[in-house]
Structures are given as C-alpha cells and as structure tokens.
Length: 156
Image 1 (cartoon, rainbow, N blue to C red):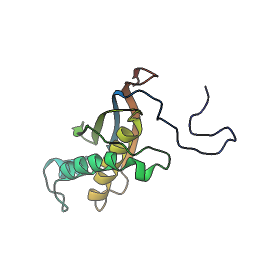
Image 2: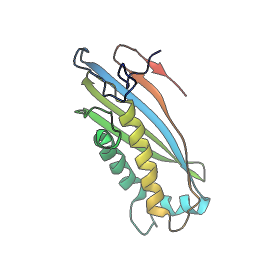
Image 3: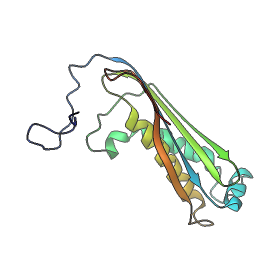
Image 4: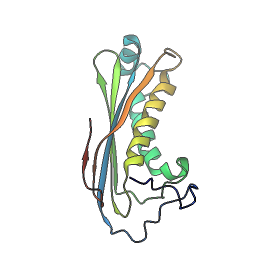
C-alpha cells in the first residue's frame, strides 16, 4: 500500500481530497492516564486545587479536535459536526478517555479523535502534576472509523 502523504518525488505533501465524495465520517479513539490511587481520589472528590479536572480535560479535548490541523502539519482543516470526549475513573488508579468525532466531508477524522484523547490526557496531567509527576499516558489508539472509500475499521 502506498503512503498518501508523499508526492511522486518522496516529498511530504498534503493529500488532494477535492475529487473525493463527501460522506458521513466518524472516528473513535481511546486512551488512559494512569496515576497513584491518591491522585485519582483527589480528582474524584473534587479536591484538585485547579478545579474540575475531568470537566476541564473534556473541554480541552474538544478544543484540540477542532485545532488538529494547527498541530499536525498535513491535516486538512475540517468543519466538525460533533465532538464528544468522555473521561471516566477506571479502577483506583486510572482515568479512561474516549473521543468520538463526526463530520460530513471528504476526509476522515481519525487524527481529530486521537488528538482529542491525547490532549485530554495531557490536561489531566497538567492539572494534578503537582501531586503526581509519575502519571503515564497509555494505550492511545483508534478503535473505530467509518465512512469514506476505505470503509469501516474496528480495532481494540
């Protein structure tokens, strides 16, 4: 399979999507941030000094999805129809993060979903790093993609 972000001379290039059909496209990504149990307790109980950690991270993830083309050099700027970012405590030492992005357009939204998850995790880290610098962002991956010529993808 040929890589799409290179021209005939092997130089990085933005993909020309002008000839593609507009279709409904969605992508869902997941990841998690692992932390000390005491850090998660702080988040659950709303005792973090910077405020509502999961609420702020949710907004950061949504904003990041909208700004993906500013962060990833060859991504197209997209008019997103919907972005959801969900953060849920998982066990006693992690927060699970899931983002779903939707649009009707000529290119997929996988990068937007992955960016939303990653920035939401980074925001959690930033908000509680004063008490736990050993947090780990893990397992960020695409779990579903639909729409476009390549069809549907299910991963896990």
